[in-house]
Image 1 (tube, rainbow, N blue to C red):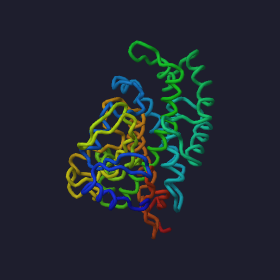
Image 2: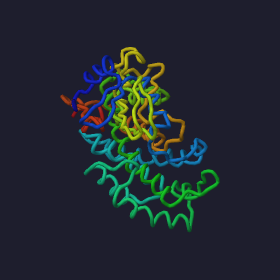
Image 3: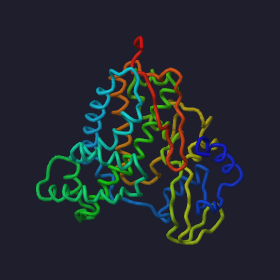
Image 4: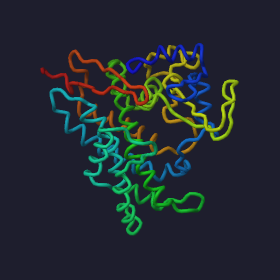
Amino acid sequence: MERDPYPFYRTLREGFPLVRDELLGAWLLSRYADVRAALGDTRLGSVDTGLSPAYRGLLEPALRAAAERTAHVLARRIGGRREVDLVAEFSGWLPAAAAAAALGLPWEDAARVHEWCRTGPVPPGGSHPELEGLLRPHVARRRAHPGADLLSALCGARVAGQALSDEAVTGLAGTLLTGGGEATALALASFLANLLDHPAQLDLVRARPGLIPGAWAESLRRDPPAPVVLRRATVPITLGGTTLPAGAAVACLVGSAGRDPFRYADPDRYDIFRPDPAHLAFGAGRRFCLAATLAGLAAECGLRALLDAMPGLRWAPGFRSAPSGLMARAPRALLVRPSQGPF
């Protein structure tokens, strides 16, 4: 299952679109239409930042500038090597390092967050036993002396006329640094693997960078970083003709939905020209999602930086990526050669 869950997903879609899994303690939803509806249903509770799309114009420039700068530094550092593991040296570092740079935090803090994510799972919402202690002094300083960084922007943001509390600011910053960073690192690894597995499409993206957003969306559809998204019913709710009680856990199988043949033609194929990937990797709501924005910028800026520093980027001889994991899925290594040189 961890190596290849897709036959199981197919069985669920075809014969058991809503079924109780006693081991997980949740009802499984596997078809695209059902999963999309559930992810957008406010009766199925989830963590909500409360930020409206209006904040995109305020926060996205800081994230973009940080992602561009961080990706360039990381790519240049590894571009001249004979072989390199892009997970260990690039995709695993870029999201947390870019988030820390955008927030105006020192590199040492990014390294600590990276170590937390590497050594064990981070609880939902970016809550980590040491994270609040790391962020609170920074928040206090930004409250007293605002700067031009993202953390200062969050400290000055207002929702429904009210300033965000310290808890809300640290929660948003924590989501970027850990929850968003971890998911983005996994998604970025799958994105790079999909392009390296399809060198003709990689060549097209190299020649036409405007194709990157579509290539990224297609990778999220085919290989989402979190194939299983858990929700809990806040009131009794009817799904697929079955009424579930308040408190029932619902597992939205995003990994199955993304390969539903009733929604996508030839769903197992990676195709950067797919007309409407409509992925569900970061939910289906209308809220401005900091994590999704960071992920998209990390993918765009990261790929551009890698292709600039590694013009002949390709798999190392004999290496093939092997995605694994049920709740968090991605290749755990990406061994590549940066150039076409005589190595």
